[in-house]
Image 1: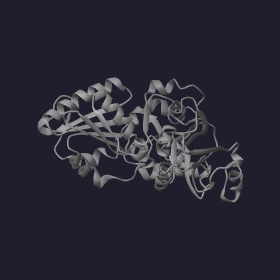
Image 2: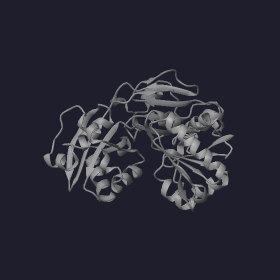
Image 3: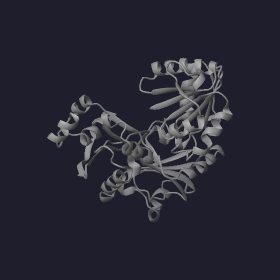
Image 4: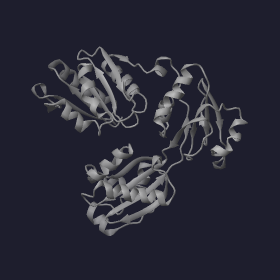
Length: 368
């Protein structure tokens, strides 16, 4: 959870809003918490609002998590017109104003609402309420596994087929191009693919059939979006690419998106592999970059001049860029810094005032 909002609608709820926001900031320093309250009760850290529907139109696309302190009906009615999909919606929780219950409402798995619900409930001394079937039955959930391992789910609609099969006590196949550490969860039949050449396409399915992996339903982990090791295959694409970008102020989204798409298409790389977009902190509010990250469904993270300057490695320096923003290279340094020391896969690319670089870091998978 990177950025969260807490909303309240009554005097009692606003007191809990302020108290809980302070506790969460103290316990989770990497989380940015913003407090909002109805105008007549707003005080302290709480920002006032008069229309929850209007506030949701602003917050829903940009927040990682939203906690309503109030009635479930208010939350449901205000978010309903904005719901886009479980891979794009923020985590949404509802807590009663007395802090007795904390309910996971939306994006329980991919959005992290169930996990956040447990954290918030623990902080507040509340009873967490989670209703997703795989959690209630304590079964393996492919979307939780994907979220924790930074894997992009290509076929969101097919997740229910995997979950349904596991809940029925049937086996689900797993074909992976990388080793997965830890004990294999119940309900899965796992077959590692030893090499990239083993990225089984439909015409090579005998490779997996011979290992005993059931053909009916399963998921594949790797880069090949055409691989069909099962009759029903859910593709999980590793998010192992870290994109550093810079641009002139006011550069619109279409130009930035086109620039990024061309760079990836020319190299045969899928944009699903992008884990985040990085830049310098003075670009934190650059609307084109913010919108691009939102479109891709990834975080937009910025670094200070000092942080970028300390990034180890050799970079294509520019005296003009250093004079303008205080560091000789933004895109390469931010990509490497964001990847925590990954390899620069695409060095600095420049086009019409935009710059781009991509770093890659090997991905590691764990069952839990």
